[in-house]
Every structure is written in C-alpha cells, then in structure tokens.
Image (cartoon, rainbow over all chains, first blue to last red; front, side, top):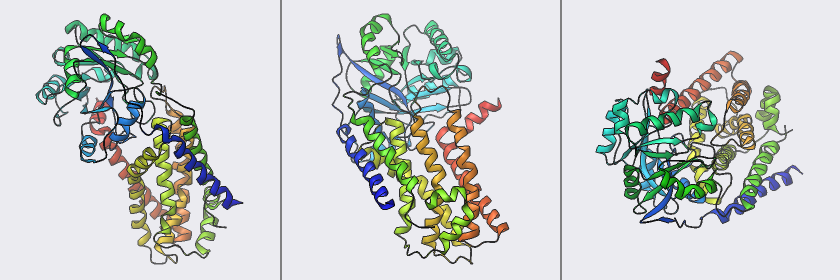
Length: 296
Length: 190
C-alpha cells in the first residue's frame, strides 16, 4: 500500500516534468518595428544563480523568452560571477539576449551597471560610480530610487545617469513606492529631459520575470543596440498594470504592447504549464508525507 | 505515520527505534534522503521562479541548488565522524541525519502552495512560518546526537549547538555575499 503510494508519488513527479516538456524551447520572438528601430522588450534588473537569484542564466534566458522578453541584464549585487559562469557553459544557447551587468549596492544608492566590460567598485559616490560604468562601456541606471536608496543621488549623480527605474515592483509592494519612483523620475527629467525611463522586475525568486519591463527602441537586436537606445533615451518603462512612462511619442507606440504584457503572461501558455507544477508539487508532497519505507 | 513525520512529533523514541533497526545502508544508498532533499529544493525553486516544471529546468535548478545539500552533508559528516561510541556506520548515520529535513521540506512545499509573486506586498507570513522548522530542527538533531550517535544528553546539546552555529554561519556568509550585506548594514547603521 505504502509502496504503491510512493510509486504513485514518483509517477506524479515524473508526469509533471514530462507535461512541462512542451515549454522547453519557447517560440522565438519576432519584435515589432517602429520606423528604423526594432522594439525590444527587456528586463534590465534580474538576479541570478549563483547570487540571490533562483535561476541560472541559461534558465533565465529561456524563461525570459517565454515571458515575451528579448533581453535581460544579469545584475547581481557587486559581482558578475553568474555572467562568467554562463560564458563558460557550452550548452548556453537559446532564449533572450543576456547582458553582462551588476547592481552596484552601496550604503547610499543602488545602481544597475548594464553592459559593462568589468566590475565597478561600489564604495564610491554615485556620480563616480556612474563614471566608472561609462569607462567600462556600460550605462548607469538608478535602481529602485525610493526611500533610503534614493539618498545617494545628488545633482552630479543625476547628471551622470543614463536611466532611472520608473517602474519597479515596489510600486505594488511598498507604501508610497509608486509616488517615490515618480518623484525621482521627474527630478531626474528636470535635469536631463531625455533620461531613459526603465521598467525592471528586480527578479530574485518569485515569478514572473518581466513583471515590469522596458521597451527599447534599438537600431539593432544586440547588446550594443540596447545600450545605444538607453543612451539616446529611446525607451519606455512599462509597469505591471500596463501603464507606460517615458517620451509621449514612444509611449503611444507601445501602449498596446504594454497593456498586453501587464503581469508578464506566458506566451503560448497551455494547461500543461500549471498542470506540470501541480503534479510535481503533489508528487513531492506525497513523498514527504509517505516518507521512507522503514518501519518504526 | 512514517519515520520522518514521527521524528517531528517524538524525535527521541523514533531515532532510538531507527538506530536499533537492522539496516544495510551503504555509501550509495545513504544518499537517497539527501537526493530527495536536493530534488525538493530544485523543484521548489523552479516552480517558484517560473510556475512550471520542464525536464531541463528541474535538472538545472536541482544541480545548481544541490550546493546547499552538499554543504549540509559536509557539516553532517564533520559532526558524525567524531563521536567514538557510535554503533551505526557513517552511511547509516548520514541517512538518519537527513531524515530530520522533513520540517524544512514541508515549509518549502507550503511556500510553493502560497505562490508569492514578484510584486508581493509582504513576505512576513512566509518568514514567520519558517520559525516552525527553525525551532523543530534543533530538537530533532539533539535526539539524533543522543540516540543515533549515543552521546550523553549534555554532549548532544553541545553538538546540536555547534552544528546549528556552523550551519547558520555558513548560511549567513553565503547570504551576505549574495545580497551585499556589508553596505546594507552600513546603510542601516546610518
């Protein structure tokens, strides 16, 4: 009886994994065009394994494409180990474009250093950190600049920034989060009218990646294309309610896409997605409840 | 009730019975419980992060996060290998040690059932729920040291404290590196 129960539990785990098989390789994205630009969907603040993210870069790339993202930036705190590991992996292949990045985490600010060629020291002022990011070929984005994390951005830092996270899950998770982000974005725009509006998930462990996202009007589908668009301010931030932030002309162009992407729905979703998770969960729960076959 | 769940309710008598029961656990079969724990961690991580499970995703997350299980094995072997009065072999002791993981396994499965999202307002209930395995695990481990490794009660408590201190120190160092804890502490002190 108990042996039969364990076999059933293992069977459920196996069935769940097999049910998920159809989602192994998501259909490639075909990003729309806007004039001469290709409009890419990107999440420019994603944590990965090893670090404080759940998924390894190669799994993130596939999951991001499944959620309709063309590119993600690997932004672990003050290190780029996951990017280095991803570069060594021979099987890293499909999915969204991975951008080498880090989240500079200091006592006074958090700043996404996106597209850099090496580590940037975090124990320096925000303006100096932004300069360091530019020296390494990247773009500097103020990460969730609300509350204490906004205090380190003086006027010199605002002048040096390329982008500001105007959409971030703390809009929903923290009281006054939406108001604080909007206030910082307006302050940054006051000094630099064409500063890039960025929408990011700050993904760690809980789905979905792409919850908030950035529409990037890039000249080409490449890391350089994404960075160039951010420098030009050719981006629109999109929150999980389908609201856009950024230049009015560009926002109008992606308003529909932003509404459709609200909450990061799965492309080509099928009943097998939740069924795979449910089967695996039931199977594991059964294995824990039934335990080993030892009699006590 | 199975041995793992009985350990939660009555760790002393259950470990005493398990230690006395004849067992032919070798070095390979000793890994059955650690492997199940690795699979629970890997599958839980995959489902929490993506809400589905595919063969390559589950394999990848299980391999990546098995580092947590490997660390637990290393710490367990360090404390198991020392006591001289132990009558069960090291493989069997390791197998029984991992029987104590049920509270954490159930907590992880409960976390999936709760299914938090990226925009979650608060994770306080999840963290409060973690107090259950945090409290239960030392109680179960003290019984393991007493009944399986046959240490006297005072020594068993010392070993439990040492084990928990090592485990949590390693965890804090890893977590500290992952989240850049030092600048956050400086920010908090300011």
